[in-house]
Length: 83
Image 1: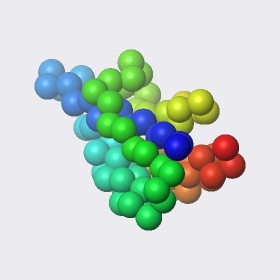
Image 2 (image 1 turned 30 degrees about the vertical axis):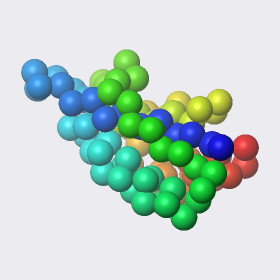
Image 3 (image 1 turned 180 degrees about the vertical axis):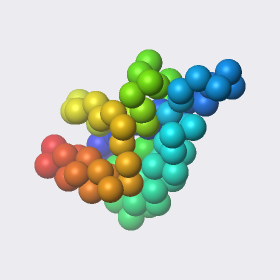
């Protein structure tokens, strides 16, 4: 099974966070895709330690992506498919 992790950290202090930059929308989009791909698991993580560069997504055993947008998701899914 392939796993993609998505940072959904939301800092209440107003500092930069992945959730404030749209990571929850990214996570939901990936979860919707995973419904039709039984070998794909999406995990929401509370923090990946790089919120200033977020939203952040990590393919377990693969690349770590910063500043992810919905437009980049096909490329990330391609990496997972190539694994």
